Length: 228
Length: 301
Image 1: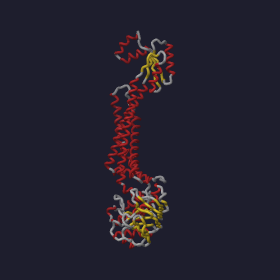
Image 2: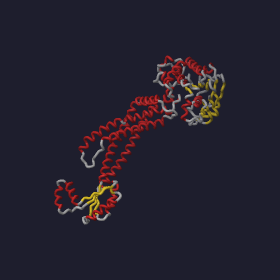
Image 3: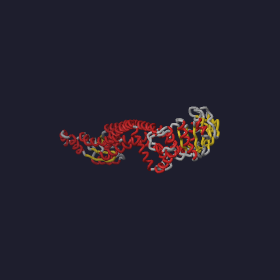
Image 4: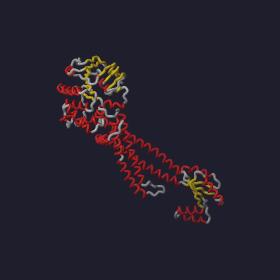
């Protein structure tokens, strides 16, 4: 599903974020990306949805070679990838329902399909009764579940989460993890950058550790491996 | 875009574009104001220039050469001269008037004072003349020189200075006016692109999410083009209203008070309508151009 070969990324300000990255992630995998702040986790994740381009190396995502991908084809790559952020990125003036429907409207889905699918994902994240609420009326955990619902509403093959529990208390974090597990169990590849030792050590999955722009550890059913 | 835009997508873009107009509040007012001022001046300037051109055309077309014939020439020689003038390439028409005709014309044009000239009827000092019109008014001067060289020509008269001055004035007026208009148009474009930049920044979150979930670039851009278009079109409303009423009253009142030979304005229909359409089109172009500029600059989608 995701293959990186000798990937290096040096930003225009001279900072080398990644170097010599080789990795293969299969369909249906659940992968934690761990490592200290500034180690290159975000760059790694942003490479996948083509937010940044590698300086050298080859990256293939969902059978698309990103180095050869034309600029105008990028939107179609993004439709295969759902992204979840630490700060949720919900539109404050739209209701929960509208926030999720928005992601389908912009790829020009028909209203009939939108109605059906939005209710489906709201059911999945257990927020059907909040469809008419505005984001600020919801708790942090609920807002994050909305953003997850939005990320998966277009049936992406891959869901990427950049520290999705970073702003949430432990109880709420488990709630989020339950949703991710559910999504992953339906065959969606899940990649999650995290600083949460408890989560990584409790719900065991493949762990890729990045330090100073290099993969220093890659083990199935791994441990978090850092203090705190 | 690889598929034709769906009807509901078009509707969505229109709705978003209109929403943006209201969202930006004072900045919208400012840029519509800029377009309004620009188009007011453009309309006024075009009305003046086009009317002046119209008058100049009239004057140009009225420019005639008066070829005074030697008093010594006999009827055959006069006839021959007329034929020769007619043969010249640049000549449009040639009309003969005898010295009696000339005197009558003079007497008539002088009104009361002309009566004293009647004394000359017995001993007419005037020359018989050909009134010559050039096909192209600009050729009047070279044509005059050509005719001067023909036999039995006493003198060639035409309103040389008046014509040249008018041409010069028009040339300057056009250049100055065009520079002014271009400057104003760019100011308006700049203001519109700034307004749309505000929209883009206000909606950067939304745009970011659109990009993330795979909206095509065209889909993201369209509402901004529509916003710019609407700003331009709204900005042309007042200028068109002012132009229409202003021109109407100008024709109704001013024209009666000014009584100059060449002072003739273009008729309301079709001139005011055509000019309004032009103003509307300029407004729309300014708006879309402004939005294209800021979309290109600030929306690296």
